[in-house]
Length: 75
Image 1 (cartoon, rainbow, N blue to C red):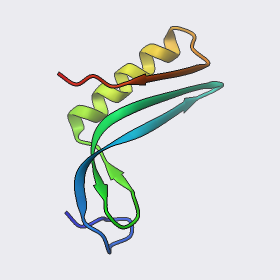
Image 2: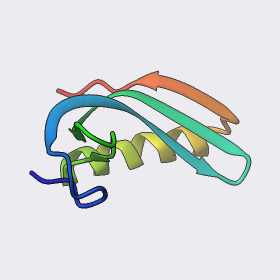
Image 3: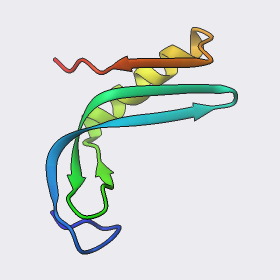
Image 4: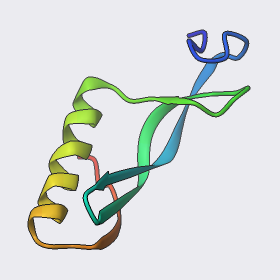
């Protein structure tokens, strides 16, 4: 698919690191499957992966984490 941000590159399957911030908490989720622009690096997550990333981020923040780093395990 054509990148909607740079409108030059096309996307390819890849993995990215997603950073979530809320208040004083930062959650880094590594190895997240995404469509990544070959030109600018902007990435797109599927609805399913977005939901999983948000669930894992919320769990980390609710546990009181100030900084949490982990790899996403997708079944």
